[in-house]
Length: 411
Ligand SMILES: [Zn+2]
View: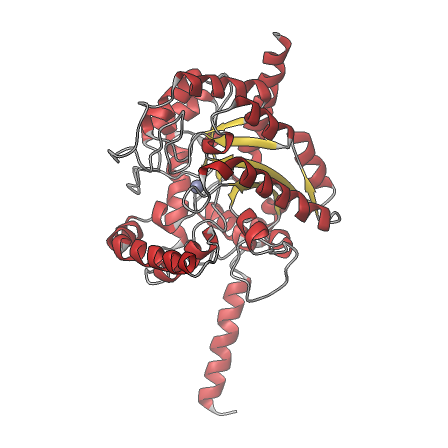
C-alpha cells in the first residue's frame, strides 16, 4: 500500500467513524425510550399513484418513508396525509379521491400486519408501540375534501381520519388559505365563514384535531377563537426566522400555547431557511412554466397526470439550490420552544411532500435520531426532547379525545 493510498484509507475510515458516531448512545437511549410521532407524510400519493409498497427495500428509492426506514429512525406513529391535489383532481372527484387515498393507507397496513397497524387514538398508538409496529394514522389536508358537507366530515372520521387541515394552499368554501389570500381572482371570506366555525365545532365534538397549517392568518385567529379543543399545526415552521406566509408568527405561536395546542415543525428547506426560500422564489416563474409545459404535454398525449409528475419536476429544480444545514431546522424547533414553550412544539416533517427538499443529513425518517442528537447538543434535556418527539402531540390528541367525550355527553 503506498502512502497516498494509506492516507485515503485512513480518511475514509475516519469519516465513516465520524458518521457512525454522529448519533451518540445517549441520543439513541432517549430516542428508544420515546414514542416518536410525526404528523405529516404525503406518502399516500405514492401508495395510490405509484403503487409504492411501504415495505420497499430498494436502496435507490428516494422516498422518505419505508418500514425499514421507520424502524431505523424509531418512528412510532405517522399521520399519513390524505391530500387531494386541486391542481390535478377535478372538483367533482374530491370526495372520491379522498376515499381512494384513505383506502391506500389501509391497504398498506393490510399487506404488512406484522409491522404496521391502523391507529385511531392515543391508546392505539401506545399499543402499537408496545407491539413494535408502526402506528398509521390519517389526517385530511385541505377542507375541500369535505365538499362543504359535514356529513362527509363525519364519514371521514368514521373511516379513521383524526385531523383535518382547515385549508390547503387553496381557499375553499369555508376557510381562507395563506396560499392564495392575496390573489384577487379568488373569492375570500375574511377567515372562516359561519359554516366554517360550525365545522370546527363539529370536529371538536367528533374528536378530530383541528389543524391550522396552511390557513390564512385570519382563519387561524377565527379557529383559535371558536375551538373548544387544543389545535395543532401539523406541519408549520416559524415566520420570525423564515418569512413564508404559511409559517407562524410569534403571536400565533403564543396563541397556540394559550390554547394548549402544539406546533409541529415542518422540515421543508423553503420554510426553514431564508436563503433557500429566496432562491426558490427567484426560480418560481421558470419552474412553474416547466411544470405546466410538462403537464400540458402529458395531457395532450392523452395521459393522466398526478401530483407525482409535478413532484418530479420540482425535485429537479429544488436540487439546484443548496440544502440548508440541520442547524436551520433546529433553530426553528428552538424558536417555537422559546416563544410557545417546550410543551407546544413537535415534529411534522412533511415527508414525501417537499420534493426531497429537506436539510442536509435528513434524507428520510431513518435520520430522525440526528434531530435528537442536535437537540441534545443544543442543551435540551431528555424529558424535553421526548416532549418534542411525540409527547406533546399525544397530550394534545388525548385532550381532544376528552373534549369530544365531554361534548357528546352534553347531548
Ligand atoms: Zn402541506
